Amino acid sequence: MKYLIIFLSLVINTLGAIVVDFQWDAPLPSTPPQAIAKFNVYERTGATVTKVGETASGTTLTFRLNSVSGTTAHTYFVTAVGTSGGESVPSNEVTVSAPPNSPVNLRITISITP
Image (cartoon, rainbow, N blue to C red):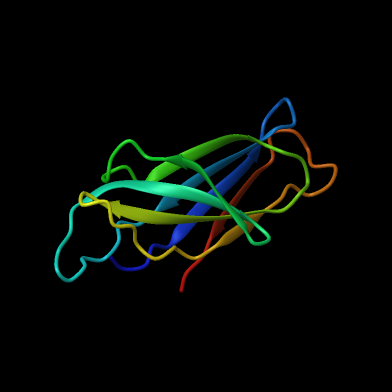
C-alpha cells in the first residue's frame, strides 16, 4: 500500500478539552491490488507507539479523537490495513498541541502536503 497524507483539524471545545479530527486521502493502489479493511490511528510518544483507534471500514477516511490532554504535544500517524491483515507503512506524522491559554472554541486546521 502507498503512503497516506493526513489533514487534521484541532478544536478546543467549551470545556477546554482538545478534539482532533483527522482526515486523509485514500491511498494510491498497491501492487498487487489489495482491498482496505480499515485504518488504524496511532500516537507516538518518544519511542512508544500506542494505537488510539481505528475506522469502522476501509472507506472511512476520517477519525475523531476526543479529549486530548492539555498543552502537551501529541504526534499521530495512520496506517491502512488490508483485508488479508497486512498493514501499510505509516502516513506522515502530525504533531498537535493547544497553544497555552487558548480561547474556548478555537479551531485550527492543518494541511500537510508531501
